[in-house]
Image (cartoon, rainbow, N blue to C red; front, top):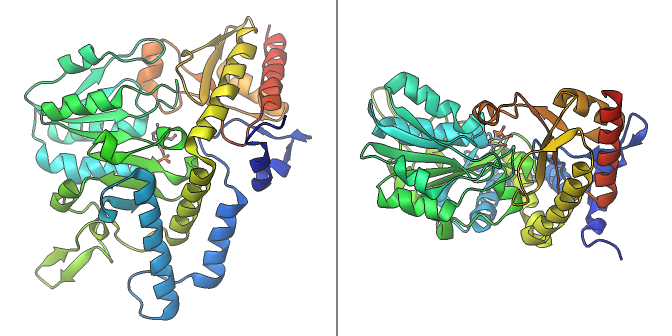
Length: 405
Ligand SMILES: Cc1ncc(COP(=O)(O)O)c(C=O)c1O
């Protein structure tokens, strides 16, 4: 029987590539996923026939581009089940979205001694903006510990709150261990303590439903390029009531209501946060990517990835000199370390066999330190991967382990 997602492989032109004379086995989608031809074609069509700058023109092409750009916002609104279209801000990526929250939401309301809770699972994108506030304003970072598989305890979490807690910055899925914290409970607790919650959804948005009204988070950030879309665009969802109170993040064209010699009035959200010419073609690509995964079904994709991951765990567990991190609750990705080979060496040998892995600290140095390692090798799965590729991965790793024995 043909596996249910096999037919979608035909949508991905990159699969025609060979690497070092072998069919490509791309297991690095958590860093950046490949785009289907539907996304690539939508972007080309936009550039070829409908492109102009948005908002400012009254000619037909500008009107078409503006409508395409704003339609993309509506598509993302529906994807996130956000209440209002104005709650969707286009940014250059997940990193910029998180920095926007730090600059425009947190900085104005926080004073020396105020506290931010974050977890050891965080990517640097959800650490460094808060560290910058620590340096600038003397805010205090309080770290939620996790066990070796990345699980956090709600009891530990609750203990971190004080009267000075203003914000919780939490990953919705770890890019190293693939685990998701109990977000709904965490958000509820934060709100009971009058703290806002920003979620880093860069990994989770690809593998699970992100329902803003159900989760009730205050902010949610993600990047299009991990969701089979283009690089250069991301999304910040923010509750309307917050966005309306927030000052802009960057100044320039398109974000003002009026400018005189002596005064400026800012445009309402989301334009207030989209200074300059936005990523227009990329927004069209993002919308197409969202439509693409939604048509297949995120749950179907997640089920497929779960089966691949289970298979990979079983195969890699048979290799003595490799230790897998995390447990069965992880989603879509698998980190491991070699007993005799450095993760970079494992990934280098795998590459020679056509298998693309990522190795390093994955921009999660506090987690690496907590786990007592410097780096991991990581295989991450997407809708276009298949079970033969898991076998190719295991074969490449067996070869690498023998090579370094
Ligand atoms: C969990 C997580 N957060 C944030 C980011 C940053 O995303 P970007 O580089 O697209 O801004 C990444 C990228 O790897 C990530 O995995």
